Image 1 (cartoon, rainbow, N blue to C red):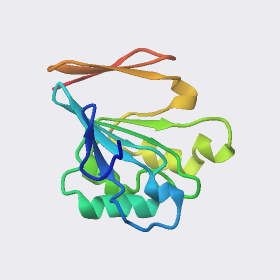
Image 2: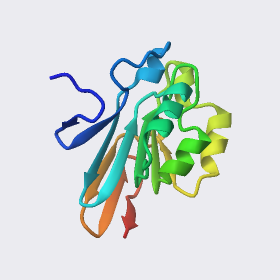
Image 3: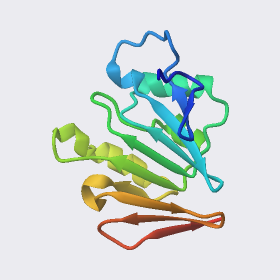
Length: 152
């Protein structure tokens, strides 16, 4: 089954890329997914580069999500400021690792994200994150700490 813009698969909606869009770098073509569980919105932007983020912002009028999950692109930083403002997340999870070095997240990136109102978790430090959704609360549990509970 080919997933394209607007496709829904297993409760996940494809927001990016649009079929036929010509972006030069693979990072700008990352598959962006959104779902809603028990009324909580989750937006996943794996390794989406700056140009891809701008295309997404231009195309989507409502990117608000309670949880924002993404990786670190090869050449750019994740989550440009305009995107963070549009999403306004309550929790940010950055898929990070030790190798290659850029996937750890630069000091600049970490400082910029630390200024967000939402907690920011880097998975190289937290380990896996498990989510439990109910109508009244979202519980995010990291392997290295106590759960974060968000309430409506």
